[in-house]
Length: 213
Image 1 (cartoon, rainbow, N blue to C red):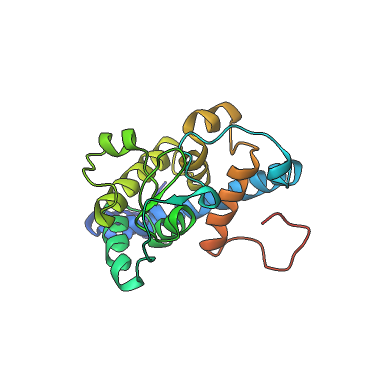
Image 2 (image 1 turned 90 degrees about the vertical axis):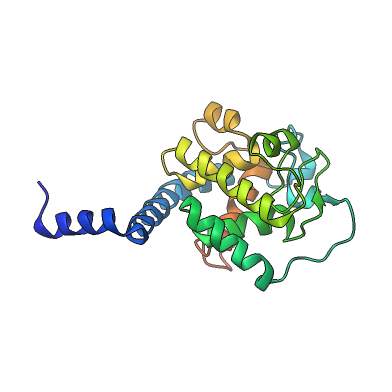
């Protein structure tokens, strides 16, 4: 049964999209907290030295340590990328911090980034994915971030608002997440998810050597 207070909150949310966005963000944070424990357990059991193990290249091939560049370009300044991130985040109902974290992890804010597998731009979109999302120039920051935000939102919806699974799928592919029933126990994917959570400020406290976070 709804209390008077709950009914008022729901009514306000229906009228004010900002309240609905805040509620969505709260659900995302809750999903992250639930998944952190599961990912941490997997990380402790996974091989920590990626160079000593063999694993398939992720479906997108957009790992920051493997990123190469089509041309020399400087990272975008915050006053340039900030408005783009804020607009895309608001439109898709994402937190700017999440989108920022993905961009930093993927390309270190360098719009000319190209991975060995051909993923391009700030959010490292594969050509086929970019085409499906209507991108005509993957190196155009606004097009790339807008499309990447839409794609990330699709993954979040696919996993019922679970941001951790969506981020894992952005890196390793939905099929691997579905097959694993959670975050795949691949060193690069675990490191990727860990990096995103750390950038969002929800990782373990620095200095805890027993934690993979």
